[in-house]
Length: 396
Image 1 (cartoon, helix red, strand yellow):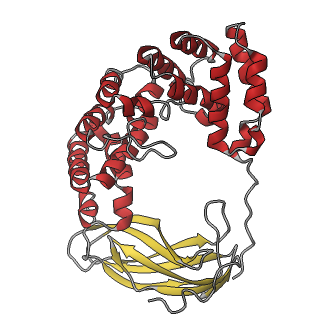
Image 2 (cartoon, rainbow, N blue to C red; image 1 turned 180 degrees about the vertical axis):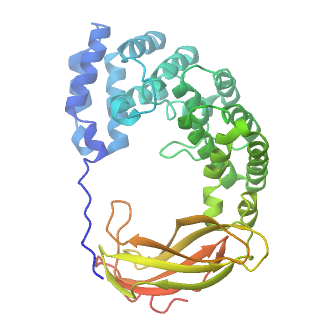
């Protein structure tokens, strides 16, 4: 079978959102708020060399130009930013698309606000209602970790869902794109206390942040992370009103579940080594980029009781350099009745994606059943050139 090649719709590079037009928009907002905002100076400095910069540097460049055009005390600067903000976002829909233009505001607070923490926290709270202050707060945590945590603890019951999410997201140790904060790992007990409150939040938007934060803790401190997952799972199972808590736990445990960690699997009732793993087959042993592969797996339950089963599959293959990559994909969760056998099928697309290219060479797949691998299978894929197609032929 040869499937049609799939293509992705071209996406505008994120850095191009921060252009001269956005500079003009910010200038208009700030000048409308205070007519002594030096609009001409801001535009001249913000656009100077802007097109040569990448995304992060563009936001910093614009923020620094804002500082030149607002030579006022920090409290006045922060009030100016607040006054320029649009109405609060009512929910989590389109937060990035609606609020991205205020990213330089957060960078401004982070770079200019440490000398007036009260005014800066007020600005961060207001900003996060329209976009996010998860990056802006990092210098404040670095400068006075426990003082910043005191302020965040007072916000865990805030009526705005964006602010509650900010309390969790801004204090993560592994927050993507964010600077590290010395001491944040050692403040894990305080962070866990924040999550203990926020885990009950009714909004999935906040729950997802809590789960991602707990996943950071699992990666930083596996025993404590697993203890917390286990305790929260027990709380969720024993209280029917805690249904969303089980979602939080599963989302937080997703990395360990994919890795086949025995204790993580057992938290959700997936017993390693009990299910009989039968034949694992692939629909093809040769494919081209853009084709789709069908995987089939036969399972059986040799016991006289029902068994919960989690099935993933692992794919390894060459990268542009010729070195191997390995990635685990979700397949299915199911229950096998006593003595039951069942054959599962799923498909995998080898289409090129912005985050994953397909390179020529030998690829290997294996199913993983409650963490236990099946026999592996191989296929040869014709993909992008530029790598060594023989690099994996002799690897075990």
